[in-house]
Length: 282
Image (tube, rainbow, N blue to C red):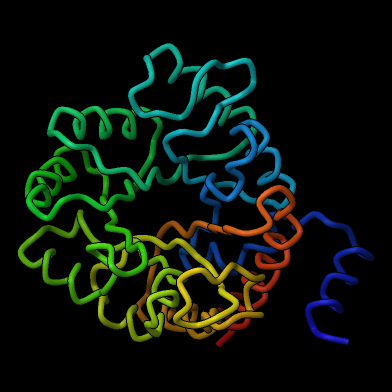
């Protein structure tokens, strides 16, 4: 019998809900574990928040385009009206969940970037996840300093422009500490890159994570698997986070089994909590 099935049996015996207490070690390390709402893109934000609450998560990374639900028309577009923004804030508060990040989004003009920062400021969002044009980085850095909101450059798989950590580090030369890296460790693996070595390359610029474990290495169309069962070396990544004294948002981004991924997300979180506890005791 594999470890994974033993773990699932334990979950079944002792309940399917992960309590907030399980994340104590991660929180103490400064790791604010939440989820990218895109993990539940087949559902409304209201339904997503309920799913996150059921596994004890207190943070969410919103993305543009998810239907809100809860009787609120429209989607989580940052250009929403102030009235709708107030309704969104009330929804988040009613579920006991804080929006700690927003993305991946890349506005095309300074005016749109200003709108995005104002939206984030109003919702108390601390990190904007983006893949902006190289030419816009100086302007974005200035806005990040103005609004005191960090911008984390995300990596999609090759051949996207930020697929390799050397590229983003070159582009961030001379920029302030308000702009840095959102490490999507799964996309590094899809691109044939070792995520631990990539983290070493971006040391000093690491702001946030999109966390994934994948079935196969250097295969673009491979899919997510529960953390600790794939090839992303999640435990090694977490040890490197500890070495770098990383403190910031971590978003579960599970892109498989879209309509019934919650059990696999929960299994991933149990693994994460257990490794965090082991690391914190060293």
